[in-house]
Amino acid sequence: MYKFDFIAPQTAAEAVAELQNRGPGGKLLAGGTDLLLQIKARVMKPAYVVDLSRVGELAQIEDRSGEGVFVGSMVRLRTIQLSPVLAERSPILVDGAKLVGSIQIRNLATLGGNLCNAAPSADVSPPLIVAGARAEILGPAGRRSVSLDDFFLGPRRTVLGPDEVLLGVLIPRAPRRSGGSYLRHTPRKEMDIAVVGVGSAVTLDDGYCTAARIALGAVAPTPIRSVKAESVLVGQRLSTELITRAAETAAEDARPISDVRGSAEFRRHLVAELAKRTLTTAWAQAQGEEA
Amino acid sequence: MSKQILHLTVNGEDREILVQPYQTLLEVLRDEIGLTGAKEGCGTGDCGCCTVLLDGKPVTSCLVVGLQADGHQVTTVEGLESDDGLDPIQQAFVRRGALQCGFCIPGAVVMARALLNENPNPTEAEIRWAMAGNLCRCTGYTKWIEAIQDVVQEVKA
Image 1: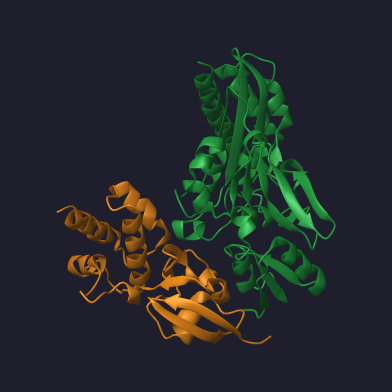
Image 2: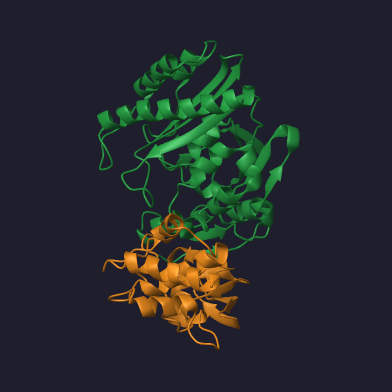
């Protein structure tokens, strides 16, 4: 393995200080399931890694009642999958987290690692964008909060500065009479990476859609929202025909490439199909709450 | 870059060893402690041959920095055996002949033990999902599932 130094701070503030004092060449280490692969492949050659696994404050799931639920960046994806709090408060995040890797991988991989690795195909990103989550970030100048809509800059690039640490995400409480779901397409059922992932959420008032969010993964350099598809739904009485039209609009919004996992044309087709399915599920959930 | 002290408990025994900061937990177990049960197959977390329990939870030890296990409990395939002999899951693998070359088996039996600790009565579908992160290239899956189901039945009986 490429040789790096290992530093294990106890607090997030110490982690920021280590990055600041030691300077360029450092990488934050979370679950390691992406970073260690990149180091082994020598895609990444850090002089040192700052391990966050001893920072207890980052491993919390905290119900902040009215404000929402906070999920720390070091919470493991398997913990998210099995969390009763998140099953109730953010089932769409559970939808995404449970799809990543195997049980062994999910016991290591973290929410923050999956976000900060910033793969366009990451399965936790569209759910959090749909949920309107905000990233809470600690840096030398203090704390700041960034909407997940604006968090990603490109493949492997986020708004995090070189000496900033992602503390976690705040997921606002979902409105009444709303529903949401995330689906992805993979050729294999497990141990695969999304060819396309789509998350959708709708809020209803007496059959009319008052809010909608649709986020697409693996069809652009970052996960993206399809605002055009959302606007097809908002203010309208939901129907199967309208959902199909919104799903087709989402496919037009996608900017996919052709690669080993699928052609651009196939990916557009998948966006329409997965948008239709996730919107249909979200609609049914919202109707259930309305009844 | 210098070696650092790693304290951990492996198969119930406290250890204090000097390791390089860039050694994986798998390398520490195999090269420093001499427990060669866990295997390096792919080295990228896909095959599951390196599966060990970290604080009771199955992980791919090729993707853990050894020093990340500082202060934690590790169980390898060597730790499944007790004074009564092999773990029931190991006995079932033997009885069913659930292996050919055997390279993947240390990871597979550790994963099967983790599954049964969490869910003593899994359905066949739950067994298949749980074992999805363990690859066998000699096509042993059917017998793995039968071996795990044998242990489920033994516990019920």
